[in-house]
Picture 1 (tube, rainbow, N blue to C red):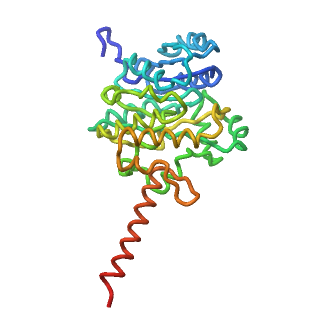
Picture 2 (tube, rainbow, N blue to C red; picture 1 turned 45 degrees about the vertical axis):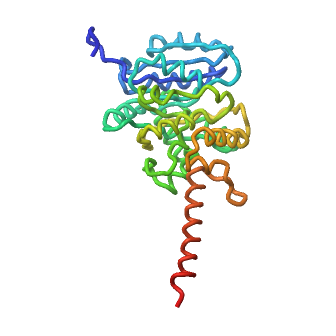
Length: 311
């Protein structure tokens, strides 16, 4: 409690944005519906040089949210720096990072807070994002059923449409206990995640040298992993991703470059698998590691059968 009897801010929601006022409005509308008391969280919007007057939108929400707005000059893609501004300014003990156009379930912030407070160890919580990276053919159908005032209802529709998080195939294969994965940091995507503010500061925040699409979030995830934060995912801590036009249609080249940069920086055995293709297939990092481990195991078994068990 503060001196005047009010609850201290527990969570700071940090949202970078760039000329996405319409999407930002939906994100803010969903935040206004949170079951967590308004006195326990704040919203920090950091504009990466946009020109769509998102500041006016944030002012419109002053009566509904504890909201602050920051703007930085447009010097290219600097989402990492924008998030760093928000995290540094945050008053909450826990940081929830979301993108403009991601709508949090009404209970999401309360569940993030419970997850962190209930843990004996620093936690990195990966939010489940329904509709993330859906095929273009599904986008119009999904848009019709997005209701920022009742995200729970939208989630039910997305479930019926099988508009799962693109990472669902990894959860199906490796399970939801992602702390047991060899490289849980590979799914630290800042469209919807949370972590302790102190852990983020100790990790050095986002590397602002990542000034193109992708990589800056996973790079920070590696450092949180090396600091022994426990990575968790819980499907009930969820959100929906509003379908919208992408700035970059094909992320493959940017993703490969980011992976190489991350491995050059950390030289971990896990990151050594970035960029590895298995035949003509491109898999997630954890999938590649698993496949390579299975291949080595089969080769070792063949060696054992050949040389140790001959009659």
